[in-house]
View 1 (cartoon, rainbow, N blue to C red):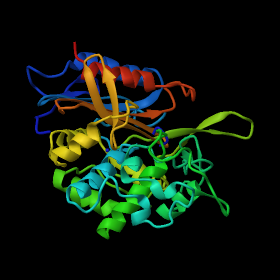
View 2: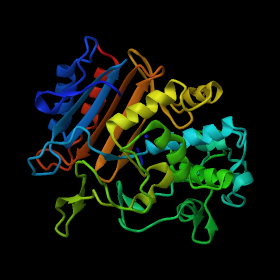
View 3: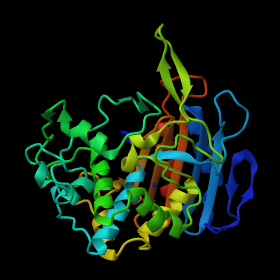
Length: 374
């Protein structure tokens, strides 16, 4: 979480993959090999969807459970973590486009007294969207890695923000004056969720559902709130937990209350839904041109748009977001015009129960293969 958001006929093929029958289809052989490297280097299971124009490839590798025999479901749902931020940012920018909110508005205007530290009254909506607020991270002391210390507790947004702005009865200082630097902070998006509620009179969950999920028909996507359950087809997620003798054992964290992540990271989705969301977003289906330009711009060169991570590959600029939650890791990145896309999710722990294994580099290599085809 601290890292950390479709009409082709699909036919099953060997190796857990499905491909769209198209002359312009992505190279399924190369993509399957890249996905298999994700499970070979530290994941129990992995799923991916790659789109090149209207051609689609979907694949799976590995198993749905540690020690099990069932393959990871190619259409499986997963906790996408900080990809949630792009959904939250999209609603904020829709409100900007409707004239109900301005990027220059301060958090203080909408949530008086929320950030009592000196300079807190100067934090703008733009600062929050671009991680330029200077707000400390509320998750400090709340998580062990990506694991909540109390996995079934329900948190309110106000409780989470208080952890960031207060140290007991003392005000915690900002990390830097608002707008002068960048520091990734989940607190920024918890505050944005609160601003959405203040502006609309409805929760950010309701706004995301009615503005994005329902209109786009994202049937595998939901904001679970305090419900700890991951329903429908899915792989199980694991985290290493230390025993009394110092050894690490895998603990199933598929069931967990993600209200601890809220508007910063609670979303459940699938590879197909995330690609559909980002394609619609980047092709102008959710925002007016002015707000979309704001979202995809990186004026500081620091790699942050408004709710988007911005990176450069040999074949050009890509945008999207990554996410990490207990047991699940996700990357979802796309070309600026939405014509090439990839979403990958994998479940950690390792094929040989090696808690130090890291499938991340292999997942990033798959992303490059998908977005920069030879």
